[in-house]
View 1 (spheres, one colour):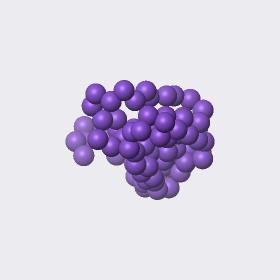
View 2 (cartoon, helix red, strand yellow; view 1 turned 90 degrees about the vertical axis):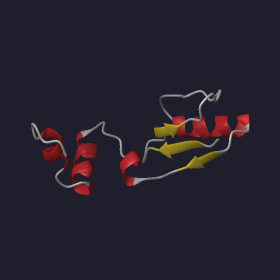
View 3 (cartoon, rainbow, N blue to C red; view 1 turned 120 degrees about the vertical axis):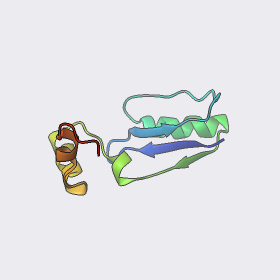
Length: 87
């Protein structure tokens, strides 16, 4: 099975992980978690893939992050906040 790691853009973090079932892989949080995840996988002999996507790479921690989300996904806030809409 393959570990999949999605890095955060710009801060060294990890924004997404797909960990194989029954894997002993330890999820790590905090600063430089992407480096720690890849190093841990290499040291443990666990095959892994790095997947970089615009959506998963984006943190939603600051007003600047939210502005970037609005830029790459126009109308996202309106869709989220529309009461009763099932889309």
